[in-house]
Length: 336
Image (cartoon, one colour):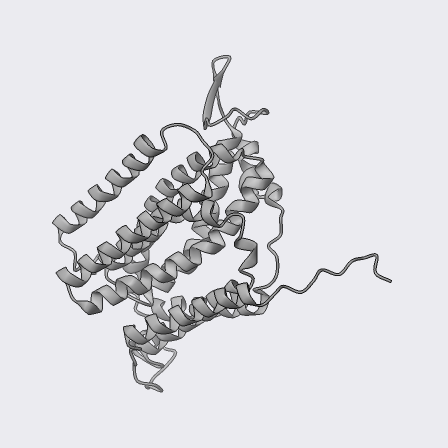
């Protein structure tokens, strides 16, 4: 693949070693024993992950320049915000599968490891498509605009609480030997010389599938900010690493953020428009497809500082609106 990265092999190696060290420290030292993660513990770990991420952003500023640092921070903020949707779906899955709260950390930890690998693959494939087919940027941009408008139209709709009808769950039970009883914090058990997958493993498959679906929104959105593999991958990883702590922090209050989907819809639509404007209307990508034979709108790159400011304002406004504007009272079926 022909794309280039600002990160040297040494920087890539140091970042990956640092990530593996933090994951080993998290699981092997601080969460070695199975326990219920309290809100206080989740808050502490959320602060730790965010602080480490901002320190890395400062390193990018110092080692490269302010432009790359602003791109990194924008990508991080967008990915972090879109993670809230992941959390809501995870809550639905865990409630349906009746996973004890003290075992959620194990599922989320394994899910994050899988997500890191899958995101790396998605990023490489996406950048490869962009490098080979310039017109794919219009597809990414159009998809983000469509997704954003869809969220704006249906942002207040409650997700269907039908995790039990998940295609992944049905296929797992059809193709794999799944235990009938809950086997505790185990993904596999051996019974009478035969290996079975547990309910916890099926739940993990559902979580990973949900993350793949959400990556279809978040990865193109990051491409709208930067196409440098180092910036895209490291910002994505830093946002994902804090997802587990954010889950335990928000699981009991996430329902209050009822205007956040609208804010995310605006952000996705804006990034989609930004991506299309950067290529121009009738640019080389559309020439290659034979769709356009002249330039209708010259390429325009929205300043990264303006992009970050708009994204931050929209997200903060949607959260504040959720907290300050009370939800309409539920109507009772017994009202005369």
